[in-house]
Image 1 (cartoon, rainbow, N blue to C red):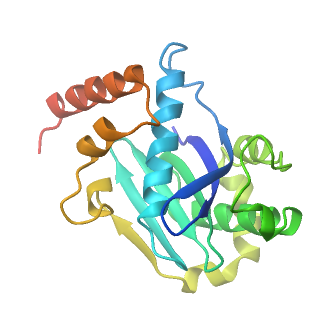
Image 2 (image 1 turned 180 degrees about the vertical axis):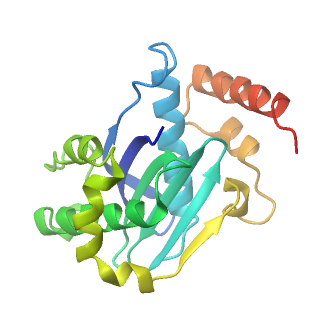
Image 3 (image 1 turned 60 degrees about the vertical axis):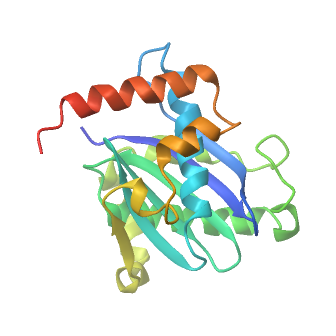
Length: 199
């Protein structure tokens, strides 16, 4: 089943990315997993934005998810986390629209210092709900014809995005953004996925 899980907007600074706004749809996870899943999706989104060059797009596989990212030349970035069935072209069209709407409503001088609590842009939950069905985005996709000409880099794993010598496991362990519970959830999910992987 096609599913969107998270939509986030960031400002990519020189050393780290700052979350400006985010929306999540985690109803497909158990109530007790939702906090850890949201924390890990936020962590993965921030990491991918920090490892993506300015003025470029990527689609990165992470276990059962696809993380679609676009970092504009003005340091505004967006990440859409979906399942593998959600069409990549539609995902990139949606995040382009989200960033255009955000840039029109929130002045660039607020981006480097803003946060989810201080920025007034409340359209993300509605957009996340509306575009759960990729067919809803058909009209949007037709309008956004220039996206076809843009090169989207597809990465097989998040490890391909990381800098040489970095490992996701090490970043998770070192992270101050993830709680102990989320780190334990990551380890358990990784073990569960590895036992079922018949390469």
